[in-house]
Image (cartoon, rainbow, N blue to C red; front, top):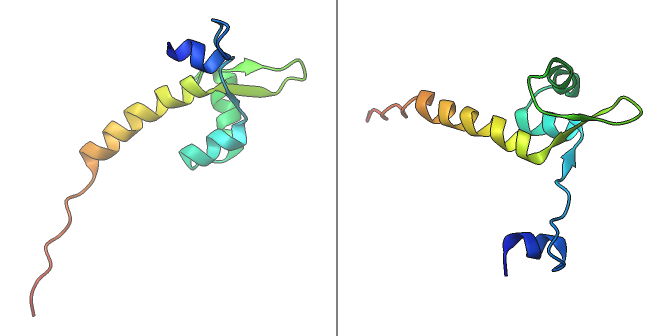
Length: 86
């Protein structure tokens, strides 16, 4: 069985992608929800806008933004300092 069939309930269609609210994205990035809203409004992160003007961010866009951040963190993380014996 394909992944699409598993997500879509077996009828051959895939389920719609999960959309996250700015507060949920903010928690993942450890920023204020207003920052995520600004990113969405400026096009820094992919989003959809509801009829009421609110932003929703596709989960794939969040994953795409988190990947480079994780690589940067791994490259720049300081090596643990050695413990000196007394």
